[in-house]
Amino acid sequence: MGLSRASDPKPVEPAVASDAEVIDALNAIVEVSSRSGSWTCFDRLRLSKRCWNHKRVWRMNCQLGLNIPRWTQKRTSKCDPVLLHAGAVVNQGWARDFMHDLLFVGRRFRRIKVIDGANREALCIEVGIAIPSARLIRALNRLIDWYGAPGSPVWAMAQR
Image 1 (cartoon, one colour):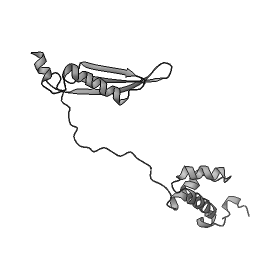
Image 2 (cartoon, one colour):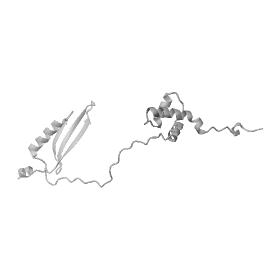
Image 3 (tube, one colour):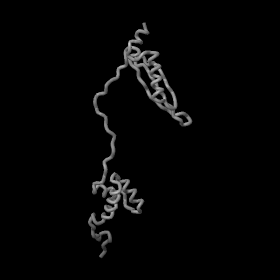
Image 4 (spheres, rainbow, N blue to C red):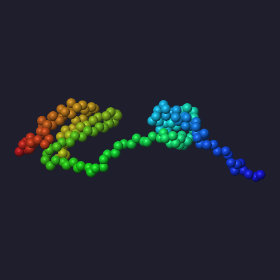
């Protein structure tokens, strides 16, 4: 007849019949852990010696409604930022800055720096491998003894 084999129409199977095995396997995986995404299901199917294409597994996952929305970070509110004003007078307010870094050998160390808000003078720097709260309280008490509490009139009287 001179017709090619490609022109011969093949009988079309219904999609549900050909995908029934994939659907059953996906339902079995989801029964064990309900938060499995498409790629997790695909990996588990591969481990159980099922060689289906990842696009087919994803399509069945979407048709069954098993696709899970991604976890996203919560957005901060879009209100106007409040500007921080530095004090106009020395010792009106202090700022603490916690930092950490690595030594050349890979060991971590931490620094706490207390600065004056008005003239940006470093009042205290504590450095150590670990800085417990008792050490921070001791350093702040030492600063209060030396300069007076921030915003208190002790510093203004000492300047006279």
